[in-house]
Length: 631
Image (cartoon, rainbow, N blue to C red):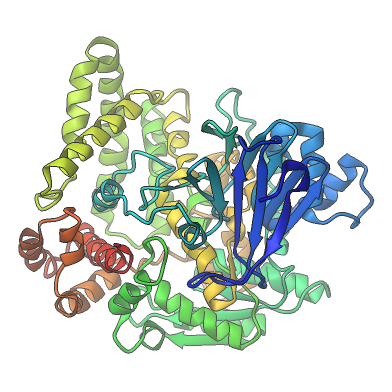
C-alpha cells in the first residue's frame, strides 16, 4: 500500500479469471498518515486512465466526452493532460460537485488525501459499471465483479434474498447485487467514503423535481438533429464502427448519421450488422437489406439460427449465464455476441445499436392518465390514433390497455392511494404488502428463514412506495416513471453485461440514444412534438422516410419478437430443463422447492402466456448462473 501522498497505480499480471484491462482501487481512509489508496491494473486494451496530483488520485474508466469544455473552463492547454489528470484539476475547482460537470460513459474514483475521503461516481445513464465492497478496514472498487471477488477478503457468498426477489421482479434496492458482499453504485449517483462508513447520493436527474420543466419549444425542436449528431459522433471515435441494423427507425437513423460523418471525411463508413429473424412477425430481412443497399455500405447479414448456435438460443444463453459474473438479462445476447464477433472479423472496434429509442422517442402509455385526468378528450383520441397507426398490436387489446389499464384505472388507483395515505395509511400498507407478496410463486423460499427475510424486504418496498409523491400537474403520470429507467436494477444488469461483453468479444457496444445530453433534451420535449406527424417517433420517422424513399418508413409499425421468443422457450425449454436436470442449485440454496418447480414448469412451458414464458427463462437462467457461482 502507498500513503496518501504516494498513491499510485501498479501494473500486475491478471489474476485467474480476470480479463485484461481490469482495475481494482483499494482505499483505507483510516490508515496512519492520512490513509492509503492503491490502484492495481491488469494491462490491456480497455485499461483506465490513472493519475496523481498533489494529495489527490483519480481513476477514470470509459470515455470522457467533454474534455475540451473542461480544458477551457479550467484554463488548461488543449491536450496537455490526460483524462484522469483533467478530472483531478476539476475536482480541485469544484470539489464533490465535479460530477455534475462531467459528460460521457464513465466511472470515476477520486481519492482526496487531504480530507481522507474517497468519492466515486457512475455516469449519468449508468453505461459504465462501478461496484464496491468492504474488505476489513478497506473499501474496494472496480468496474468488474470478478476483480473484486479475486481480492482477498471479499466473500463470494451469494445473496439468496436478491436471487429470490429477482424471480419475483421485486427490487427493494438499486445498490445490491446477487452477492452479499458486493454492491453497485447506481447510475447518476456518487459514493462517498470516509473510513467509517459510506453514503450514496444522486447527483443528476434528467428532469429535476425542484424546478419547473423547461419544455422544448417548437422553434427549438431542430436542436434534436445537432444533439443526435453529437451523440452518434461520440460513438465513432474509437475506430471502425458497426451498426446493429434492424429494420426500425432507431438503428437506421444511427446508420444514416454515421455514414454522413464518413462522407465528411471525419470517420470511416459504418458496417451494417444484421440478424435475420425467421419468424414472420419479426422478420425484417428485406428491409435490412434494402437499407444496407441504399446506404451503400458493407453489410453482414447473419441468419438467426446460425447466430443462436447449434444447441439453440435457450441453451446458448444458459451457457453464457455460467460465464458471466452477474446473471444475464437479455436472452438474445448469444446471437448478438456472435454477430459482434462477425463485426470484429470485419475490423469493427465499436458496435452501436438503437437502444433507448423506444424509451425516449416514444410517449409512454402512462400519459393517457394525464390526458383523461385533465378531460383532454381530443388529446386522448389523438394519442390513441397515433398508437394504433404505429404498432402492430391487436386493436381491442391496445384500446383496453390504453383506456382502462393506463387511463381510468390508473386515475382511480392514484386517487384512492392519495386518500388512504392521508386517512388510513395502515390499510394502504396491508394492500400493498399483499400485492407484493402475491408476486411470489408458491414454490419460492421453502426455507423459513429466507421467507421471513423476503417478507421484511417487502415491508421495505411498501415503505418506499408510501414515500413516493403522488402524480402532480398536467404531466404527473408521464414523468413519474421516466427517471427510474436509469436506476432500475434490470437496466444496470443489462449495461453491466454489455460492458463485460466488450472484453470477451473485443468490441465496445454503445447506444447513442442513451447519451445524457440527448436524453435531457428528449425528456423536455412535449409529447405532441415527440408524436409530430400523427405517429410515434416523429423526430426520426420522417427524416428516415426522406432518406430511404420507397421503403415505407412513414407508415412503418413497430415490430415485436415477443411471440417468437415464447415459441423458442416452449420448443427448447423442456430439453434444456432435462439436460440441466432441474433446479438443484437453486434448491440447495433454499431459494426454490425443486419438486414444486417441476410441477409448475410442466404446466407453464406449453402455455402461450408471455409472462409465464419469461419466468421460465429467468428460472432456467438463474439456475445456470447459480450453479457456476455457488461456493
